[in-house]
Image (cartoon, rainbow, N blue to C red; front, side, top):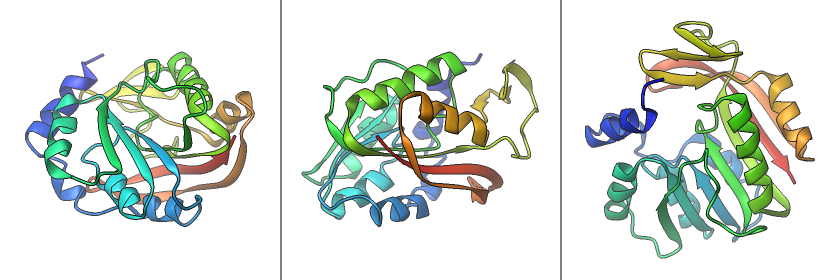
Length: 209
């Protein structure tokens, strides 16, 4: 597989995603309306930090992480809220936080890049760092997406196309990931929305520990 970190470093160096990151996303607004006030939030795969900055402005304490040191350095210059910390973290590796550290883990389009084996480890790590009754809020590409099945197959529901690796989630797969770590689903939505100028299928879940 192509080096995904280098791919995203290049995209952020060229500011290729900046036009899509000028304000908070609809999903961030939905999560904000659900979670308790003054939550401690860990964002996995923050990109340019627009959602994390939004959560911080709403009074939450936010740690925003991404595996691209390029975008994390840019975010240090772009945002200056005192309750917003940016750190380099590869989501597929051990999360550098203590057990029960956060009330919310938020991941928009950042959990669908790993094999099943690694994805299960990611969800176990999320479980570890979440406080009891904490929220896991995530959105991933879904198996009805138009590019599902295109490119080189890596494993079931996972393909590499034009250098991009994507692990498409089915509802059955998402439910199993959550049931395996004892989470209960508060809401689950499947649908279509425009992501980076292309209509994409998604599965969107808010779950509780």
